[in-house]
Amino acid sequence: MMEFNYKLEDFNDIAPYEELEKIEDPFKKQIAENKLEAYAKKLGFKAFKKTLAGYRKSLKAPFEDATDYKVSDFQGQEFELKLKQWNADETGIWRMGNNGNRELACFHPIYPIQRFEDIETSKEKYKIEYRRGQSRKKKTKIVDSEILCNANKIVSLASDGVSVTSETSRNLVSYFNEIINENYDDIPLVPSISHLGWCTEGFVPYIEGVEFDGDARYTKIFQSIRSKGSFDEWVDEISKCREYNLTARIVIAASFASSLIEPLHALPFIVHLWGGSGTGKTVAQMAAASVWGDPVKGNGIFATVKGSDSGFEFKANFLRSIPMLLDETQLLEKGKNGTPKFKIYELAEGVGKTRGTVNLGLAEVPIWNNCFITSGETPIVGEQDGAGAMNRVIEVACAADTKIIENGPYTANFFTKNYGFGGKMFIYRLNQDENMEKAAEIYEKHRAACIDDKATEKQAMAAAVILTADELITEWFFEGAPLTAKDMSEFLKSAEAVSSEIRGYEYMCGWVAANHNRFGAVENGECYGEIEETGSNAVVYIIRSVFDRACGEAGINPKALLAYLRHKNLIKTRGDAKGYCVNRRMFPGMPVTQCVAMCIMGEDDRDHDTYEDIDF
Image (tube, rainbow, N blue to C red):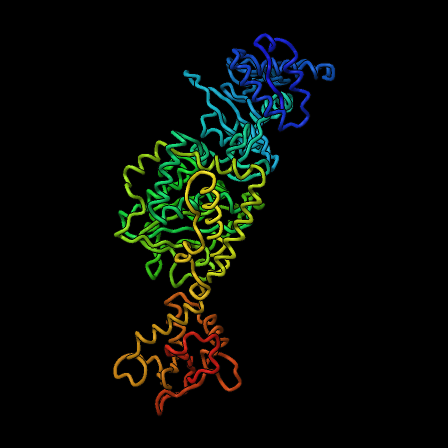
């Protein structure tokens, strides 16, 4: 990369521009150009871009044909743009038609000032500049190339204040086609990216010289990932939060851990804080958000949970490796059992829906590799949720009499003024020496320890990423001993706790106990079946339609549960061992009915792996 030893007068000579053009790699050349321009401005040379454009034009001059070119004449333009048919000046964009009349493309100045090229996909966009009205205030907008070359799409710029109609759109497309083709190499090239997090060149937004060209809705979030205040004071305050409460420490570590998910080939996961108001859940989330940028709710990566499923997908796709923080999950629509309806499994898969386009093609599928840090008054997983959802959530109950943050108001105010240092420093250290390999070794150590502690594979994976982040930040920024698998164990679920089949069996056992008066001879109301006791155990004969109904009300798939119960010998079947039911006559004179003969174990038999030897 170029070293700058030029003086002010050197920029009126050929040397700096000649040295710049010797760089062959387009990306490195653009980075060098950006630095050289800033260096020239610092010395007081303000005509760098125009002079560079002139130098590049002189290099091409011998090879250009003899066609006479016009040039744009916009006030304050940094470089001239060549044109053939069209005229471009303060009166707008126009040309003379075959009939001698003036054909209009736009009533006001509008022209490309930068060409953006995505460093991952190589897709191109253009930043256009335009001025309209008496104020002639400059406006800019980054536009997809396909909009500028399509008469039906370019009219969408009208909502941004561009004077374009269905009648002038074809002329405006013709103008942009000409001005881009004739000035393609002269329009400054800017390496760009449309999302945060890891990409082919490093970690966005910490790659120098790369600009954001993505959806304008996320510009505010992109700009919020920055530093403000004092790094040393931020470290001191985060240290106090980590030392005061284990929950705060886990949340802060999870924020750092989000950037490790992709390089460690782990899966996205959710850390959910739940409990009553006043425990400091929101302030703990602000501390976690301050790792990366502005922690004020609504300003950046921290927001309320209000939004659509597709909105969550697209925001996660934009954040990629930076955590998404969502507050107040109690605002979500509730399921039958009172737990919020939150598509945990889909978010934790890291891949969005396949969607079509208006042209009958396929839109780009959203992807992400981050963690979600949520909070609310209740858990976000319940009995109706499958093992996949429960596996991907680490839920932390926050007791009403225990504070997560010692002084919530002070801490919240502090982080609004000091933020954005942790993530930047963490990524810098990860990219040094062999620290990424070191992180992988630490991760495998913690994953194995969590599995040994009876956690499921996916729960162990999520916990290990958090523990890896905590160990690294403890070594690099803070003091004390890192978290261990034992510290995390109370928040992790075992295979038995996660299994939807085991939970289904436990639910039906409880359902039988709650409805025992409906079994046997029932004087009034519906009969559900009968109970046959055998010592400390029992066999409950449940009419099949009643069994299916009870399962359905609890969100349990009855056929899946019956398949599990048959595999575990927890139901009796016909003599041929086919199906899931037995035929039984409840009372004399009543018809024979298909029943689920479910075995209820006594306390002494509940730890058996198989139940063939139990006397039912």
